[in-house]
Length: 245
Image: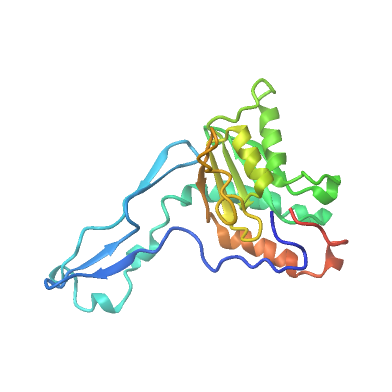
């Protein structure tokens, strides 16, 4: 749920996987290029796990060419984030939904729900202004559509994934837990109302009987840019000032 209309929502400068750090070794002068401690494992859109190991084998000075420290390793810079890259296409679908919201004066947040095989089961974008419904957030609309796609025989969205452009609010995080989705993937953080780690962490509260996996920062700059543009545009371009959501 994005901030109030009068507040600028400026997204993070950069998101994605953590940058590798460089540690200079001891007397033998070796250099190690390491990632984060331990490995990170997340499921991809096709339900398959993707594993990223934290670090590379140490390379000694003799194994590096002269001047190797003078320029960045282009190979490392070109390597995509193996955890977030599989979710780029689903997030672009959510961004396409978000882009439709300002047509009715709604804040540009979009969401899609993917089935276990990656099929889109539901889509939605903010429609509070359009529907006059305070609960018409993108996530709720997408979750309801996904449940209807299943024929109404089972409301549980087991092994499904909710992909949304903005960190869910408390209402939408609660809905994700109650719908039993396997994971929540979001783009930009919401430092003022986020309930997936920013202000609260309703998705991973250990007291709950269901805790979805959470992956953040997927196409975060694009997601944040859409919101920033909306909030920096005069109200006259969108009609009456919309509320948050």
